[in-house]
Image 1 (cartoon, helix red, strand yellow):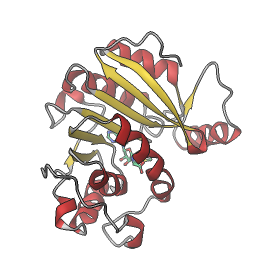
Image 2 (image 1 turned 180 degrees about the horizontal axis):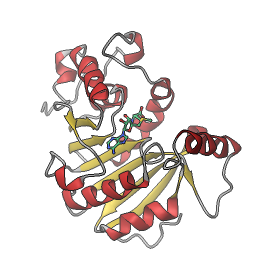
Image 3 (image 1 turned 90 degrees about the vertical axis):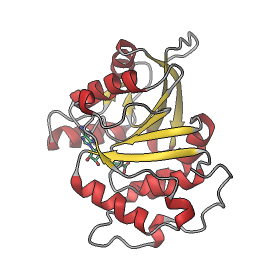
Length: 228
Ligand SMILES: C[S@@+](CC[C@H](N)C(=O)[O-])C[C@H]1O[C@@H](n2cnc3c(N)ncnc32)[C@H](O)[C@@H]1O
């Protein structure tokens, strides 16, 4: 990994049209700047494992803009891995070198994850578009491979007991459950309880555009001031 700060990229993924291999997820172009702002503040230097990378557009946008991190995109679906490989193939070399080879990783089977250690894990928009077992596996795997003080950042919509749910999120939740009864927007309290079972403490919740949150968990810490 290059130790010197990278030249800020002048390209952006949306300038390259999606082709046969590259997938384009429009939401990534709407949320990536806000994600970059949060992640550049909270992510430690070192190895970052991205779970559920989807098209790979977050990986190729974020990794070159987060100096000192080596970003490993993973997903459970071959089409996603093909897409992120295609996006990486188009990067200038100095930016491609901060990305590790994409790997197949199924959050539901943490005992078979191909990565033994990461300084931080990033997971964007997965736990509501997957069965609850994906959240359980994510927390178990994170609890296992993160070092003490390691960080897990989740991004997406959440239900919160003490916050009214936006109408758009209620409608989204309904549409998710109509597609698959095992999907649905998760209650932050339940996600945090699952995290705690694996030694990950809720550290912060950051309000994001379009009624999303970035939720930060840290391994082995207690932050009594954190509130849901
Ligand atoms: C809505 S997409 C989000 C993709 C990307 N993070 C983004 O924000 O554009 C959900 C992703 O979760 C992945 N996924 C679903 N179940 C998974 C699992 N059990 N383990 C890992 N990835 C999973 C899907 O393949 C898909 O790429």
